[in-house]
Image (cartoon, rainbow, N blue to C red; front, side, top):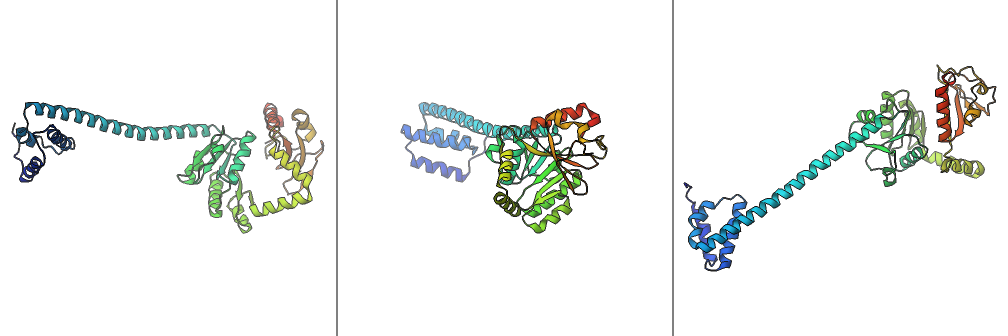
Length: 347
């Protein structure tokens, strides 16, 4: 076999090893074998030097021991390296595939939603909003803006959430904003709420938007951006405290209605659209109370006035908003009733 002659540095290194080891002992031969094996497996490639020089210090017995050592060590080392690399690659590929499959399943489930709500911000007030939606059976999609939703939300059946890791336009499209009924933005920063409100309004002008405002002076800006309702937490809390003192019974009733686990009653509203066949009909003709058990306690008119406790002879007009207390079961019953009797449909 034609090989290149060793360099002076290589010869010097072998000579130093020869001087330090006692080749007449098994330990010396074993150490030499281990050293040469290590430099071989690390692709240093001193095989030609070994055969020409190191073999001169070995008899047949030690050469066989050397060969056995090299063979076993190289096989074990390469198997260990392959095992580690295979597991590392499998982890990377498996994690990425699992994330992609999870996201595809999430987007598929969101694509099936219609008339759902989007909540921007899944912690703090956002977690309360999402919990209330889920508790009443209303479909909701959360958008996480930095922190993961609380553990109790992530484990709730029916809760779908996206991470704000891409542009807001793409994120809203993935959340099904074109099919959504409303959006709630409860981020801590007013600039974020303002930008998300404006973006959502541009993508779906029919969307009902409720936004949080850190200061009362920003409520008008949010309204100009497209928010239908904006609220300042400090003002809302203050009004609630006053109502709790002056109208404790009313506050207790509202709290029990909201926190009820058995009935899940909610104040719902129904808007009479411009093409609704209910325009010009009376509440008695529609007969919602007898068919569904729902009692309309107020009607908000287009000019801002409110008709309290409307009677059966109240005539519905365009853009009237009916307010009623109902359970999710009654809402489903009303939906089936209105779908079955299109000539009495309320939109």
